[in-house]
Image (cartoon, rainbow, N blue to C red; front, side, top):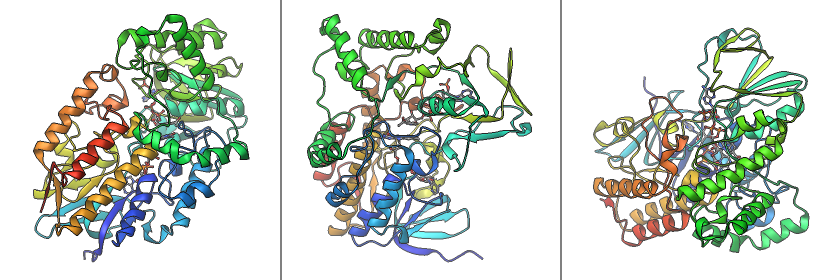
Length: 532
Ligand code: FAD
Ligand code: N01
């Protein structure tokens, strides 16, 4: 017998930064809400990614909500870039402070979501068979939550322990172990220096090197934290208007118009200051002009060669793609880690991993005996978590089919044919190219305002039009095509997942312009959406 459905006004899937704030805003509108979350706790990214070294790459003060002045005042960050446990504690604090947990079902994975055209209701079914019926469905499922798992032959025979960074359990101790790390994206680059200090021996399997800039992380004094809190409103105003959701003034000169010695000084100052925009902030055109990009690349490679003592290892660590067209990594001691005696870098491009045996990793030319293998293979980004759910809109059309050639949205927030369903930070929004806390708040505010507008104006239903969707997809592609981003195989383009359509997914136009586009849409009675 089918279980009777729980009836609510809105169902939200996911209880990370997005889902928590969505719940708070929808409750504020007087709606009954249920949040369905696969994990056993809140936090999303920060619940799952407990690997050693996990921390944010946007300054903690800014990688936070702004909706509550009390929250800003009461939570004190201990470091410039907080580590995972502190960010998780923050999100748990938010859940408690705003009494959010009572509307969240944990340990619950949504497997299907169906729209009933006649009744204008969504029905979501969970892995446990529970059913939820709601007028609105908000997918706050995360851009980086669908973890890529290893498919290397022989893993089932491995007698040691293997771990996924994106599903890291508590209580792992790598002290004195012989460890292999596979993957050198942001995750691997954060984990490797920490694991190297614990392990007896560390083998790093690198297929493609990445650019990484120093975090220059440090503890914040009470006085600094207080000053950051006092200046928070101004910082956030600047961040909202900026390209990347960070409180910095935009550069105003082309790298090619800056005298070379001055440009080198700007890069050097950025490297010393640290942070994700260390090099990109020097000029306007680092990710749009090939010649400008090459200057920044050379600077980064020179830094690697200066830090890493063995020239052959340094060369292997030198990336060759356009800098900034994959997310720039932000590290603490990454390159210096390869000066340690207990660390070895293996080029998994020229000497690929062929199999895992009972006691180690075998490549084409060598065998490495290990007790633990850490896989840091990244995510099926932006669309993976949505594709994991069978989402069927009006007329039973599946989202997976509609997106067979790549995702299509209006503003990354809504999809034609899927009425009353919203995405938070979906493909076609700045999301992963921005401080996500800023983008998430803006998306959630947009969604809440749209729902309030429907109710105040006597509408029951909102749906993106095909025409608006086509126009937005074209706009997103046109902007991306004017940059170097699409030229690089990255998870932004889906290139990291075999068979995934190659489409550049995020909106490169920046947070400020994106916000203005959303505000325009709302100001014109949700132009591009059909209300009925
Ligand atoms: P998530 O935090 O991913 O939450 C989505 C939730 O949905 C998850 O808990 C998941 O379990 C749940 N879910 C998904 N599918 C289902 C389903 N079918 N049923 C039930 N539940 C489901 N961004 C920044 O801006 N700055 C940073 O410094 C930064 N650091 C990062 C570090 C790491 C290690 C990673 C992986 C990402 C980082 N990001 C960063 C991006 C980060 O994902 C976002 O900043 C933000 O945390 C996303 O919040 P979210 O709620 O949208 O998604
Ligand atoms: O994932 P990635 P990530 N055999 O896709 C390698 C955010 N984040 O988890 O490039 C061998 O970047 C793959 O190699 P290649 C941030 O947005 C932020 O590190 O495909 N190797 C690559 O080296 C980030 O961009 C922080 O050749 C294989 C690595 O695995 C995003 O999350 C921290 C392989 C995957 O790198 C994703 O980062 C962490 C295989 N079969 C994450 N398959 C901060 O610092 C894949 N690889 C805030």
